[in-house]
Length: 170
Image (cartoon, rainbow, N blue to C red; front, side, top):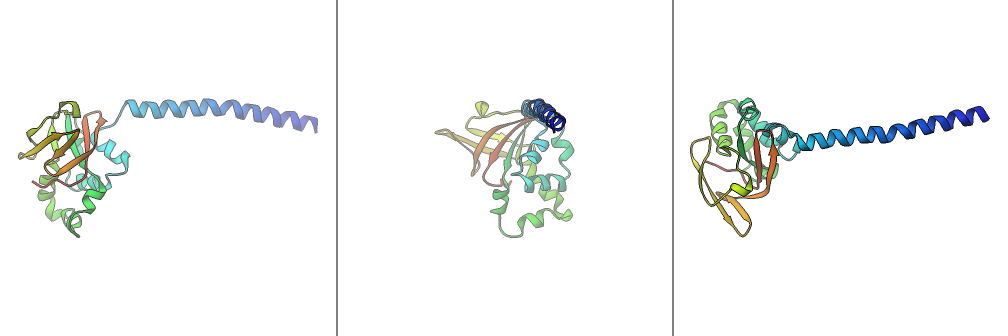
């Protein structure tokens, strides 16, 4: 019994000593992920609130472009924003026959350059689709056309994401 007790105690002490090391390692990995964000596409995937946007980016063949050097500023509609579109709209846009239309819509959400909220001012800004979006800044609220920025300055290694509550249509 005494040998068993010592072995058990030694095992518990060893296990107890391993836990802080493992927890510390996990904390370092989490910290590294926070300080070294992925591309705008990787950040959108990791977030979990952009499954429709990510599916659309994939269907439009824009993953490689938006994973490129950039920098990009992306006005990213949430899944709820896509769900607010008329019934069947998203499913229709994701069809291969509508790829061109989908590309136009998605690229209308992207600016060439890195524009954190500190650099956003009222005015028109040309999107990579070619048409401008109207930006208005008033009382701490940023609007892009009729979409409200609900979360600003989500960092990515190739730009920045501003979360919006509506899908922008060119």
